[in-house]
Image (cartoon, rainbow, N blue to C red; front, side, top):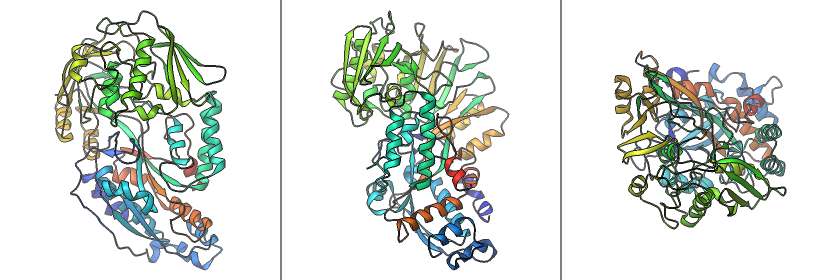
Length: 563
């Protein structure tokens, strides 16, 4: 393709690979890049012409009904679609990063090289984009970072009736599979249902998955135990070690800013990173395992009717300040989330919770409004799940960071020794922690917060920092890959990039033609090229609706459309 040469320079301006949880738009978890937004009112519309000559190939004869046609051209011809099809695709550079222009420029060229499409690209700032996308856009870019690392959060959100995309997709057979997998407690059976569901959705193709973000950490050569980057998408301090010394303090750099130490007042990566290391959860993720496992709990189970989820809390637990940690703290935590319902917080995740009761100090009962809701276990291990000290935190309003630190109200793998928000924080191992993260393999963590990723890159390469975590640019990562001073560590990422089709307003005179156009687009886009040329491998090709690393993930879209 001509694209490969034309867009090789994209690496020089590629946006940061890491994404943060965002409260923008209709979902708190539409992806957001951490790069500086371009100037306001940036809008671009590209005039296009179809490919000609040899590049277009024989498939340009689609309108003629030639029986020798194959692939995308045949799909369009069989549906009676005249070519070239005029497409208008919307994308957004301030919310999704500067590299979105390179990504959609590449998609435009790939589509036009087939001779089957002409493409107009419209770039709109996020405030307008988020307000207009449902009513006015027929084909457009979106991204997603999960509320919790479970396949359902990539399926029911997008493909249920009246989904948040508002793209008019409504298929009863898809809805039936969504409902069935949510109440299937056998893990193997549920994974099979999730795989079937993705294959069925791929036939309708209401969205086209493109790319899956990769978790990236850069470590110094003296770091002998790097962070575990797995499909829980959590960054844990406990296993990191340098110099083969379990007492050595590890210096970590990040650009992920913190909103609040109070779990009721934040819903972003920076805050959650801290919270998962200093607060315990009823259920959490053991390193390397994306399935929640008991942490504060000894055991949990659904009642016979599936309406109540009961957990037995371990006896003898204490907060670092000496306060008793029991089922009352758990009830207090979830009650205050619902009471405070801060707009920047994660209380919206508790839509399936009716009430919490405590029959005794070591038993907590979660009463749910849907029986056997298997996503509940994921929610307990999500950003709404960090348990807080009922003797320190307010029941009705957010508790200031300074009060939390002064009260030493922590019971996770670490406590906080010093706290200068979004400047520097010092974490000390908690000697009483016995949770799923394991015994800390270091003497503490010093976290430095960088406003510019370029400064973080300089400090990891010079050895000033031991670990760099979110978010270096793709070009920085490519450069560091060749450095002898550091090692780049990758893991599966939860964030995805995809194209949304409004199945009613997109081009095509009939539903059959609209489907054929979606299928032809799917056959014409080269994900590998997007991954390598635009994003330098910091994103990997995504071939289905559930990202690689989660139970039930498959490659249904690529399998069906011969990618």
